[in-house]
Length: 273
Image (cartoon, rainbow, N blue to C red; front, side, top):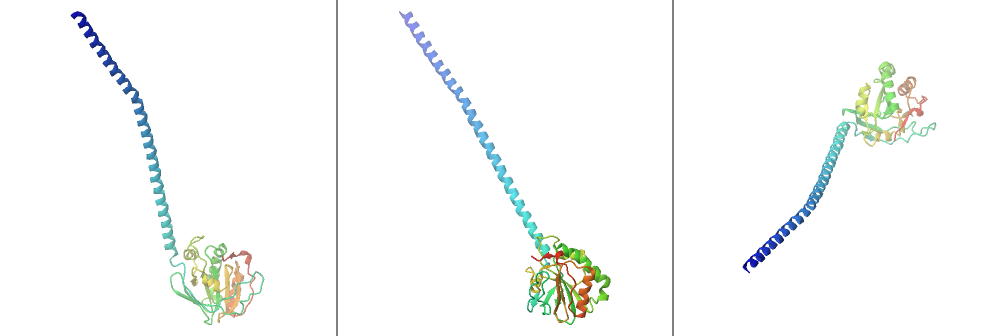
């Protein structure tokens, strides 16, 4: 009987051990099944982190590009401001403005009228004026961006250099350039540098940003020319590139005080607008 009891006890103990071992194996199996899930979660987290990293990089690069763009525009504005210094004047204009130039071929209503007086300055700030002082005058309206003006400037300067004394320029009559319609956003800026490079030596009056002198004299095309007698009365207004012989007629007109025609060429001119 005791032997049988011992056998029964051993059998029970062995069964319990087997059962416990089975539980441990099952638990280990379940743990093993969870490992792949943990790996997937980690991979997802890593992928998400990578995306956030790229987004952050794009944001940083975008901000950097924006900053560089702002700095570039500020630098451009500062350069324009520096280059614009002295390129616009503050002339004082007195008297009645002349009527606008008529269409090509029309009679000029300004002939015989008294032109406005102008007290202005050149690019260096030296005073220059146009007023009835007994001397005839030839006014040359030019814009730095006008291709016809760029052609005409050296032609006029060469004529004055070669025949100025003969024509009475600087003694009997005066020649003035009016630098007008200037803009830092247009070609050949700034006008002061351009005229200096061309060797222009005649008196210059710098117009204001509103082109007030241009408007007061009613000029509608570049290059523009006005001839005045000693009392500032208009003897001639015209536009376009002029040949040397035509320019000579302007000086002779200013010297004689008598109105005439020169056969101006409006086809080779630029609108003032």
